[in-house]
Length: 154
Image (cartoon, rainbow, N blue to C red):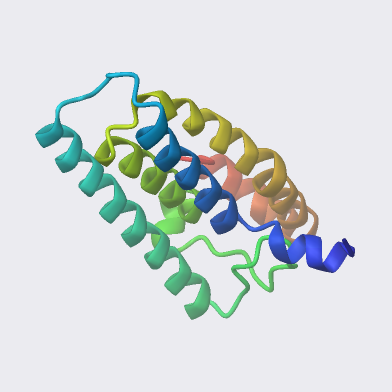
């Protein structure tokens, strides 16, 4: 597979979709009789999914407003520290993790909770660390200041 095609397929939403598919399959094929209780799991799951979608949408709108890329493998035009980026250096990824956790709870797929730390690790290694490296090289002291003021996740 050519590198450009590989990069086009190496995107966080596709990894999220893969984790969601695994949780869905686990829910149906290997339920193990574990559960949180439908009312609480549904409520918390719905809040996490809704909150995750909202957080990611607000981050994408802020990136768009600042006229910089949201693609993880591209060089950013500017360092965005406003909006939801004041709360987290990675609000889109945080939103993705919230969405995954929410669906796992909503589906009552308790064994799939193991996917959460795996997904966080994958996001950090494949996307966050390389992105921060590009930001550190391009924005030098400005990124160092931002990095000290704002946590990576929350």
